[in-house]
Length: 102
Image 1 (cartoon, rainbow, N blue to C red):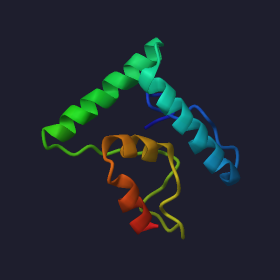
Image 2 (cartoon, rainbow, N blue to C red):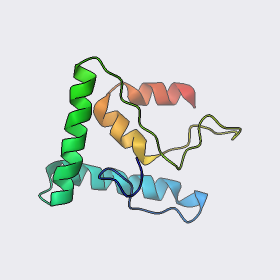
Image 3 (cartoon, rainbow, N blue to C red):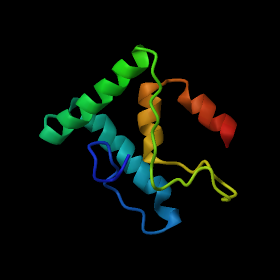
Image 4 (cartoon, rainbow, N blue to C red):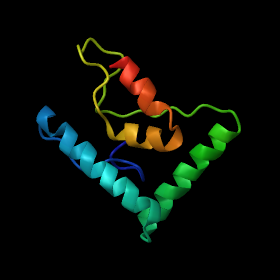
């Protein structure tokens, strides 16, 4: 989920303390994108639709991002990430899994 892709997070974290701000802004952007009319919104929706089709066909979809280095030696490997917003959209059970891992 690279920053420059259709589902990338355009909100930059300058420090770790900006993580929640950047993720909150991304969630708002994501919700607006789902109903938006911009060409970039359509690209993002097409990508999401292809992921949904893969999941419905029984395939797995792996989301990765540069901001969370997992697995790592970080004492908090499950840091909040914009990819979690996408995961929640694709799998309503994802928040339960995320909370169990934290």
